[in-house]
Amino acid sequence: MKLSSHVVTLLISLGLILFLPIELTHGTDLWSSEPPGQTPIWRLDLHPLGFANDQEKRGEYWLTRFERPVAVTQTGEIAVIFVNFRMTSHGYVPGTSSMHFMIVNRDSGKVTYSKAWPVADRSEIPSIIVTPEDHLLLYSDFSGALALYSTKLELTSSASFEKQGEIGSNWTSSDGRYFFYEVKDGRHYDLTMVDSESLKSVESWTLDSPIAAASDRYFARWEDIKDQYRRSLYVRSTDTEWKEIYRDTGCNEPFGFAQFLAQDVLLVRSCGKVTILNADGKILFAISVPPKHEIGLRGPFGASSNGKRFATSIAELKRQPWWYGDPGYDRIHPTLVVYDTAGSHPVSSLTLNEKDEWPFGFALSADGSLVALLRGGYLELYRLTGESLNEAGKAKSR
Image 1: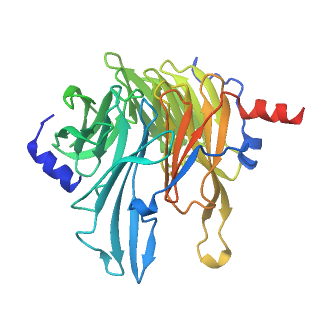
Image 2: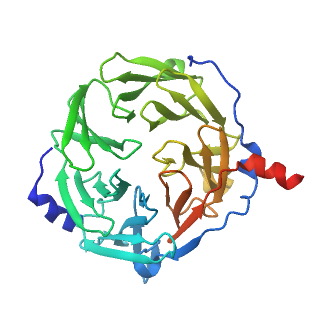
Image 3: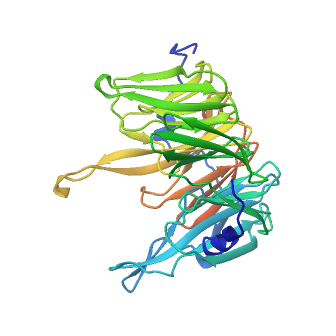
């Protein structure tokens, strides 16, 4: 890891017991029903603060883009970041990209700190996470730059990835303590773990295949066998060999997804279901997706740093009309569902946009009691109860 004074300038311009099934938690009623009366604590309109929301003005389009745009600090303040740029019929207009970064008070829903700066390229799409010491780590896949900010948006340190090849995926540990990035160098993949506070490299590994997820103790990777329609997830610790812990067969879904909810607990999405299992392959619980629905839209999963709650989105698939020529599917009625990991039940359901036409972002607080949701240019904060939707439905029917 090379600390560089150039990065500050850049940031100014960036600114199963194996395979034994257990009882599945099917959420069919949940997916098709309305949310149980969830109302936000507050709702903040971000349009006056720079959010463009794909607005058209006289043949010009102002677009807003982000990856992981929302974070909830340890004290409950909400951090939001996004980038804007202008497009015309001739394409991107150089020099129009700008980064917007702000802190919103948890209780009042008002902006307490805000800053914006120009960025050199529209590809500089930012993400943020909260570190254990309650700093905000800002990073961009495109530039390989890292920046650490206080909750008052004061830049405290910066660094850049060591790039000796093509930058691949990146992750953060469940508690935000470590940042991982992968670089492909020929036939090898170099994985580096960075301390999120010092921004210094802690350890590096050279591997023969790309990594799907990482914690400070374990790595996970997928292996597909196309002629058998088999997909397997392998896990190894930093000092053991690879071990197959999960397998799907008869599935031609193009991609699988994995994320560590804790050091040794993984969330896996594959072949129309979500599975929680530990690094030994023991399944804790699984959720099947109803027919004609799709799980894990843009920004597929989010989890509280204590690993006790996670959230995922799901949308209904509606066949497009025949006159489209080569009709596909529209994603409609997208919903964000928050689950209790230990209790294996949903605790809340939040309707997103009417159609899957605008990107959204969300983040859970460290203890899973709050969820901040960014959609359609509005930031909302919700307080989640400990009662499951199933229990709430039973109580309502009494």
